[in-house]
Length: 104
Image 1 (cartoon, helix red, strand yellow):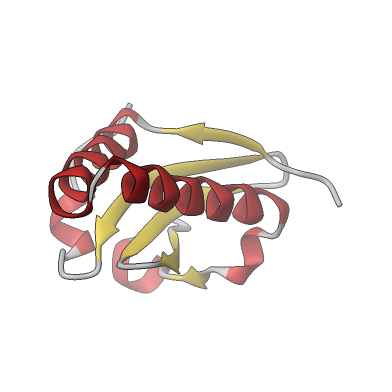
Image 2: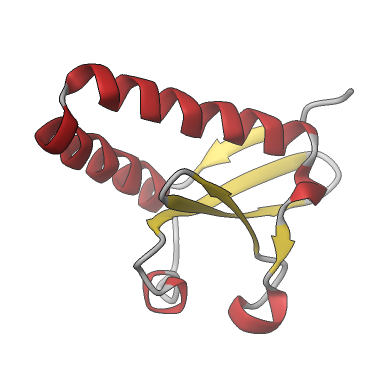
């Protein structure tokens, strides 16, 4: 199975840092490492099988897909060669308001 080339936007990297900080503060370093590993494993799976996510184009525009992992949702776009992770948001967050500004 071919794996797409992965890229995580600066915004999504900031989201991962927030997840780590919050998880460490609530459940400790060991749990934070475990949970982040689960998120990265899901990103690897999406790079292998991007079609497992839900197409959110109508709601969020331009080819955005989403996939749940734990208490979070990964928002991404893909083509035949690449997958770009645009956001990793807690399920209580509204994706539309967090994904409207340009991303790097």
